[in-house]
Length: 587
Image 1 (cartoon, rainbow, N blue to C red):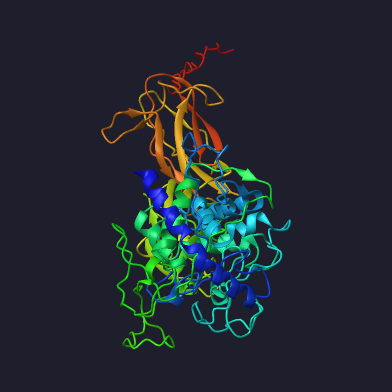
Image 2: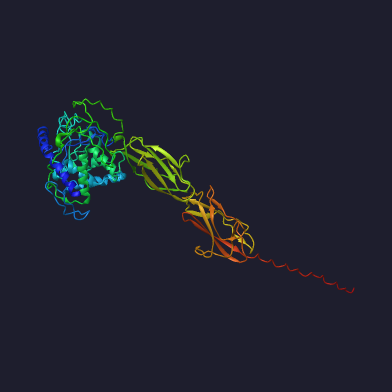
């Protein structure tokens, strides 16, 4: 069945050769550089990627000619293989090295700025194949620029769309009508909106494959398309050229390249030989299952690219002789320069602060439009998530800020809460498929680099009694009072405080039971801490209390438990007895 379908497609492509010869002759007479004989026409309207309308001049190629050659009938032996792919006639399976590198670079660049688009490089390759035969078989210079430039025929309404000059001939050397330019065939008005400088040479050159491939990738991703969804991919391809035949041709090459391809040297690619016949009045009918085809108005004008010359449906255009009613103007939609494309970190550094302090760093994001340029007036919502108590200035955990003219939005200052730990700040922008950035942040406990007693009085208690004098210390940081610093108090055995003690002095818990470690102590506004009462058990001796702060400062204090000294009773001196008087006989 598949082979039968391919034979039908090839037969249809072959029937276009006779008509294509006339188109090639016309193109050769009008273009000063390489025209349809060497590369097809194409281009783009900046509105095309944003509006899936049916207007001829609303297509990225202006509905001008493209190559209709189909992939080889023989497919790779194994899906995903990357070598030994066959060639059949003019349908070369390989892709020139520089051109292939440009497609892959564009995929990687778009993946960083618009990951939700999921742009595959094989889609760029498929479009590059039908638009320019991979820039005429890889005939590009060392910088990836096609030489001579690739120009399509003048879009003068004679067999092609009527698009009057928009660039003064700057890109296409035609100051009367526009022409499609370069490997991906952008018309000048489109390039003015979508042009990119992918190779960093300071120029946006539609004839450079690197610049053109990235521009095509961004164009296909416009309108929040997800190219992994079939309907979005079909809309994207139809925005490039509004023809179901074009879509089928691109789809066939896309599927072929997805199964595998290989790199060939620049300049060795085989040029396609079957250009389509332009039919600017043709608009696509809905494809089964896509829902992407807009409604059309029948036109009596025959389409020369179909056997039998049957009329082709399509909207009437001013100046084509049609008597159909004038269509209503399309609803205005944002241009690519006004369409939100991506959200990026604008250089926000590490988010760290001490409890209760203000973060030095502020969260800053950058919004870009669909062209990759900074986009202003985009609402960005910043939200703090976590249990550290951190809030934005003003006490809010969620704030919304609009980007400025430089595309940046900066959240208000963050005020750290009192609880140490980690939290996150998220920045969200865009609707439909919002872009989200998440920043990790840390609150560290207040610190002190020194702690010492406020007096030197000896601390002594009798067994089973309470220490009469309280222990008071002061914490400092860089010689300034360290307020709100957490202090841990532990009764220890050794002078270094490495071993806890289970005897001697103790604190009391709420139930009055002995407790030898306290972890909920905090210095006051002056950095001072007065410890709770300390009690002694019945064990006598010298004990140690170690106080440690956040930041590593510590002090060890001696506590002595001893019984009071007994006072000896005073000895009473014997009373002196006066010697008895001895009577002296009278002489």
